[in-house]
Length: 374
Image (tube, rainbow, N blue to C red):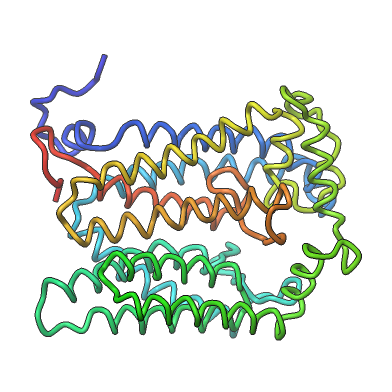
């Protein structure tokens, strides 16, 4: 029985009857899967780096309530405040990306982390949702407000963001940002000729990355030719899925996680495969698909171009990030260090995804009698 009456005109009451409760529930279930898998996978990683056995799990569990609060709190905001929040957030994260290049900590040849007020922060995680909403605003303005060169402003923002990301270097986040911008430009009515130019430039960029970034070269060569490089993590990942079978070994009973350096983050889907089994993995995949498809279904009758573009960008980011992580774990694509949304360990990723999906929930809210909740 619902706690709120349909006659309740309070902020929370209106939110309850206008928010997509099915998608909210699916996102909370994903967080639950993440908590279970972090509890199972993080002790081995904690022992390897010399911290307390459950130290990483404790950090994750401390951040989970904050992430849920972020997501729900942002989903309460009206559309106008979401736009302003995104622009402000993008400005701050661009400054943090620049600061990371100067003051950041280099790990495995990349400078992606910065220590801020005692916390280790990865600004590239936060730039994605803010980029998607800000670019959507610019593209929508180009169609509705005469005299505003929104399309060129959006392209300029994209160039600034990917330039800062490539200087880290972070090809994976660059690909995600480019995919978000490309999909939004296409939906905004970009001509097919320019779409072709965009695809050509993206292909040239990937080829250039292969020849100029050694870690990209090694990963692609290792994917195409097993003899060309180390496939240790991929082999262990595939072994985990084989061990898990249909129903899994049971939570905490897997053994491969002690041999996988990134079992709690990049390869947590492998831990799910070994300990929870194929059925649980299919449930996780279904939850991601449900969130994305449910989000798009809310947009089918949308007549607000900004909402359409912003939600499309945010859902593209969410779905693409999940696909990249899971496809890497089962060796469908070259390995890429990218978290599985709401499941992998990582405070920056968890909070940034909560912000992004909070904005999706806010932008897809409906009034009981129909129409956009503004």
